[in-house]
Amino acid sequence: MERLLIQNSLQEKFMDAIISFDDSSDIFTVTVKKQVIVDVILFIKEELGFQFLTDLCGIHYPDQEFQLGVVYHLHNLPLNTRIRVKTFTSLAEPEIDTLTTVFSGANWMERETYDFFGIIFTNHPNLIRILNVEYLDYFPMRKEYPLEDQTRTDKDDRFFGR
Amino acid sequence: MSQYNIVDPPEGYSAPGFFATTLDRVVGLARKNSIWPLPFATSCCGIEFMATMGANYDLARFGAERMSFSPRQADLLMVMGTIAKKMGPIVNQVYEQMAEPRWVMAVGACASSGGIFDTYSVLQGIDKVVPVDVYVPGCPPRPEQIIDGFMKIQELVGSESLRRRYSPEYRVLLEKYGIK
Image 1 (tube, one colour):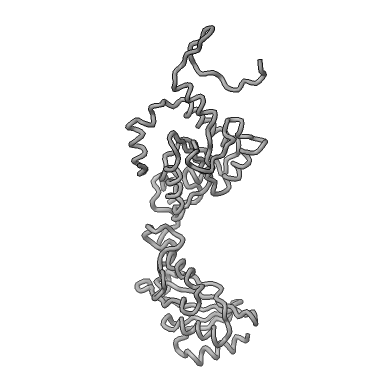
Image 2 (image 1 turned 90 degrees about the vertical axis):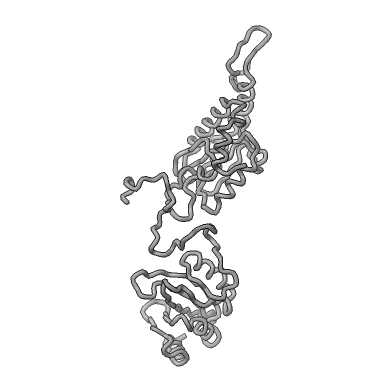
């Protein structure tokens, strides 16, 4: 499917809710405001035929104003075209509407994203940790936490260059 | 006279017609030559254990050919591989289901200390959830090392006092891990 066609129809429908288009990579990328994310994906699914949600994941860019992001990958199976939709939110209010109303498959992936990045998907039916232990009290993929286990008692930092 | 010496008799007094030794030593001798291991293999150390059980290395020579896949009949819990934090309570539960006397062997760097996985999701050594008798280093250890560790367990089993498991020190040790 022509990228220009997608761009024009999205521009026409959502106007200033769309932050940017990125044509430089192998997958056409749209960045939108988080208030319209469900509407945008519903439009892409129903009107543009991207009926398969390939992936949904979180991302954390500590240097930008809206640090936390969610990236959605959609696939148009008959035309074999893909599209990437991004949306960002601040650390202070990490809430984004759930996509489970559009794709049931988003349920698992949103739980995983919550588990690792602490992004709260509002109206998600069962937003609890899925992969990590229940008693974990932080979100390990956020950049402010070091990779190493902070509860270790047997390693002397001096010997590990820390 | 057979050319094979199956197992040496324990220390004791012998004269024509009788042999006297302590009950501890007889029981220890019997136990150490019929340890039933429970293999808890989660990753590559488990593959090395398969080689250890195979014909080349043949752990059966040590009286351990009978793998017990039920913890209730097992004497020795062999934890081989990375234990994620989410797996920790399961290791603890398996240990609780084993009948006394029971021993634990941590095979490989991950089971002993977390190994290279110094990260939020991996338990930093199984001694955080169960008491460990023998640690086998290596990433993964060769079958010879696993056999060496097993022989160390045999030494412990053979020399253990029959009263050890009733001692207050042992109770304190188990309570530290929240077992019973």
